[in-house]
Length: 131
Length: 135
Ligand code: SF4
Ligand code: SF4
Image (tube, chains in turn red, orange):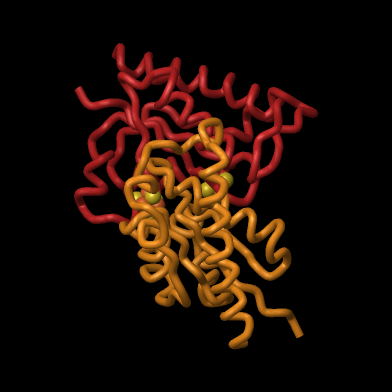
């Protein structure tokens, strides 16, 4: 069975984009490497059929920074089956007053928030695999 | 008169070290090396976005900065706005095997990776300065 694709938007303008990237990498590298992997979002939407085939018909979990939902929209249009959509901006709402850092570097608090966020995403990966 | 700014679009790829380095370098140029002279945009927003985002490359001369020779930022800019002023492709600039390695998270970056990001940042600055001198 192919691995669940976990795909971050990696937005460059605000800390939310960096949070998506680091949370996804924590899931695919450490929390669930046997059953999940990531792919370059930019490649599946700009690449050829072989690039789109990386997500087409595959179970995907998208992780976006903000309500623009760039990863979810792009993965959907590339034919990925979206099992869950996450937004890092929602994580900040549950950590009101917290300072996650900047789009360049996460703060100590930012890393803690990202780790909690990654646990939630990994739980969805496991749920998706067990279905 | 509005001062000319240069658009820098980085691929921010998630599969290879190159994606992390172009992202870091772009942020460094914006924040430290050429503040106020460079603007950027989330590449996925540019790709998935509406008219306003698509105008980006029409409003600013764009440098596409890509982590590998799949050149996603360049391809996206050409596809949606028709023009790329200049490009940087990391696999042409630095050791290909290192750039295509799986070290992507900021947690794993070591001093040598930051040194590579600095090389990319100075390459971006060189191209920004050239464009500004032409204007
Ligand atoms: S979802 Fe938001 S943060 Fe992420 S790429 Fe799109 S606009 Fe940028
Ligand atoms: S240029 Fe290479 S590293 Fe960057 S998004 Fe495309 S495939 Fe990924």
